Length: 345
Ligand SMILES: [Zn+2]
Ligand SMILES: [Zn+2]
Image (cartoon, rainbow, N blue to C red; front, side, top):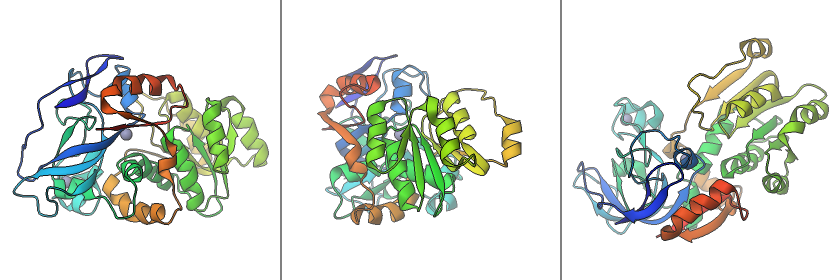
């Protein structure tokens, strides 16, 4: 089959790779219909990935059609259109069954497309482990792009908002306005935020946040602007969607007393220098991690259906998988309004 393969820094190629095959009778093979490029895929693209492997298939967001289901698959059958969770769990332990794949007791939580271990979703076909659990029929009434945004981006934004303890009346700041950051801005209002500040270097992205009702700020002006707007109290909640040391520090500086900071951007610094004094003085809550995607669907599917959340509107480009190398280049350069890149089979 054809897939996007990582051959080294800034070298992702559309090439041939072996068709996916069953490793377990609970696996299913899914023919990709649509897949996305995530901001975290850029870490791999830049050569700062999660494994030294080369030649593996990248990507962790996809929807598609079940073409083969193992003997142990009970809920899905060939022909079903499904959305995949970007991260998979064993699907049989107590924690997975309760929806917490990040706490999988069999230590089988993994993500597609980070190494040769579990091949990625930017491919014509995908092996889905424990398919009954890690894939879900696309809910009725959802468009393909809406379903695709439920495989990673919107659940991650939602998880970030929950970690930042958004509640009615809170003042929220979102740092980093890629697709996940913009989804966090929209989601913050759904959770009852009274005011949302949205921070990014890119003017185009700040303008997008303003259309959602946020007060958009350049990082350089953020500290003074939020201090003035809140009479020195600063924000109650911060969602950090970049993962760089500087933006994590900024987010911690932007919340006031008893503030909560939730980091969902991927940080690959081995040793982050944590501002203990400031955190102590403020009584800060700091959370970091990734979400159990499946666990968010119960809340997010009805919110999309009822038009409260519109994750699909952040899709800026839809291109064929065969042009995936160009899609990466555009996305990396943030050119041509590149925001959310979607590829079709
Ligand atoms: Zn992702
Ligand atoms: Zn498990």
